[in-house]
Structures are given as structure tokens and as C-alpha cells.
Image (cartoon, rainbow, N blue to C red; front, side, top):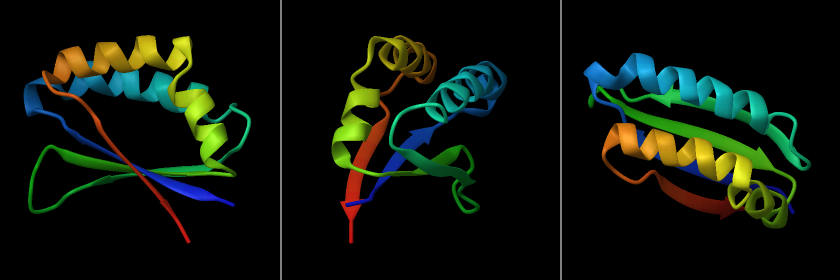
Length: 94
């Protein structure tokens, strides 16, 4: 059963360029993962800096394999350090 992963981050204006490089790398790596279907990034209008990624996967197991992988973990740690906060994740299904 397909799942949607909501990934929330707050990116301060002074960190946008540094974080953007890492997010592009993360997106590039994500698209080649088993079970990945699609993803989109949204920027909240009424709260500058708040971003939401909606990622669709064939199964929660496919997502977990990727999110727990060493490759992704290393990139995500760099993002969280730059942001000074943990990225939030929510998993949904129909």
C-alpha cells in the first residue's frame, strides 16, 4: 500500500543556500531508491522559511529502508546541524 511521507523543516533565510545544496543532493539520491514514486517541495506562504516535502513511496518498508540508510542519515545530520533543529516526519496512508 502506498504511503505519503510529510517532511517539515524550518530553514532560516541566512541558511537557505547551504541547506539547498544538501536538499538537492538528498532529492537526487532519493529518486533512485527502491519504492520511491514521487516527491514535491512546498514553501509556506504565511510562514517564511517553513518547508514541506511530500514524498510518495510504494510501502512504509521502502521508506524506512531509505530513511534509516547510512547514506541518507549522513546527509540528514548535516541538514539538521545547519538548521539547529530536527526535521519532522509524518507517515500517512489511505
